[in-house]
Image (cartoon, rainbow, N blue to C red; front, side, top):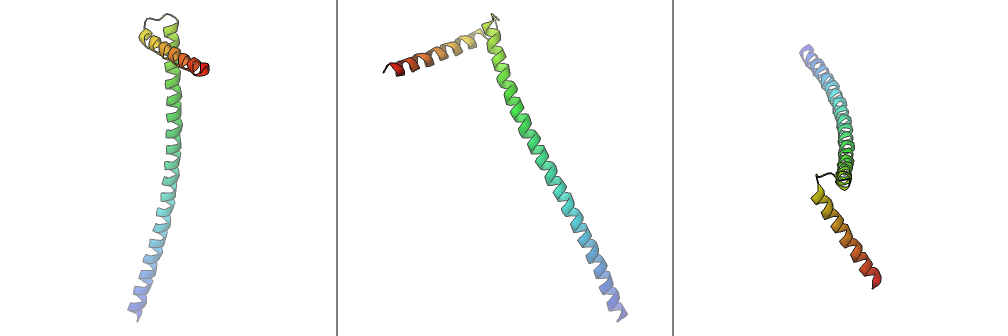
Length: 96
């Protein structure tokens, strides 16, 4: 009979340890999920910042071209021609 009670006590101790380990793993899992959310947020913010910086860079390139820089003149001419075509199209639409 004492052998059976020792087995039961041993099982209770092991079960208690398993419950503690489960709680610990759940806490760790939640911390990792929170860290993942923070990382995703940081990535999204940095992606938006990169896009803004790319737009600023393109604007600066265009401005440099317009100010007489030899670099990117072809791109600037193409962009101006494109804008002129769009304006002509709009004027034609308004004339109709």
